Image (cartoon, rainbow, N blue to C red):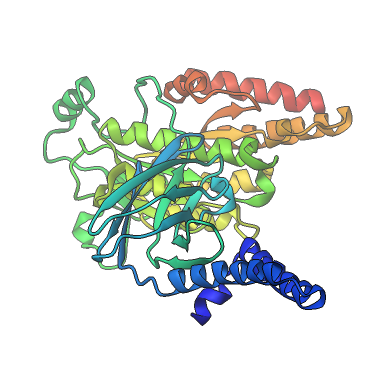
Length: 432
């Protein structure tokens, strides 16, 4: 009963206050009829409190999300199934599922009555425009009487998670460099030229058999190289996401970093579907091998929660990639770089890897004065030139650039290198 009295609603408390006022007025005026009205006004909320407070329903709740992994801007349907496990019918139930602010307002649904062992389902939709992993729940059930005079809350402890992943854009098929054999004609030529037993090389690691040292590659690179155990027809790729906070500009879903995350997701999914053994490395510390299980979901879940990092340096990113790098194809989605940082990235070419950079000119995400714009363009051109000189294939990205439109540039040959290097030289010379 005490619990029920504590659950009196504003309407119920108003009834009690009106009863007290009517009783006082009846005593002052000597009106017995008014006293009867006061008794009636007092009895109604008391009966409602007793009714709700003594209700001991056994309720079971099950929540399902379809889908539980949704891209940015898409909707997910949440289905709540509530079952009355007791023999007593319930009164009116008000359901409220708790949601984070990013998923919108809390949905509220009214169930008039659940009979003994009866179940009922309700559904609502949520939508998020920001990547992340969000808790859905717990569900709060409010028990109330038919007159709305008393209301008590019961909460289910269980929660579910909705993962909002970056937008994945389909990319056109492009013949990429750096694959050891890939598929189709590429594989046939590789086996015909090198033979089934030939192997590529990688850096020497402590514990490697010295009999596997490849002296020709060692002389060419200046570092001790050994033959790899993998066969040449295994295509491998490492996708690198730059998470340096000072390398990106803009706020919210339209920031340059969000473009980079979406591009990384699109490239990673595209390469996996093309048969690559894929590895994802981010400046935030993630190092995911998609070949170990989980597939696209593992990659997208990681990218759903990636954030900008104020402390990340290009040196750390290079070291993290080289810890397990065996050559192959390296695709970097990079923010704004200085010339010194671009020179550090040349270290990824040590294993003979083919490196492709999508270099984001994050200054184009800002409205800058003419002088500041010219300085930003000069810095961007200098960084691109430094990467090209170290053997990277550089693809510039400005605000409004669509990834499918520039993706074919990743497959251009050395002639494209020369053209881009010459253009960068011209731009740098003109600025000086």
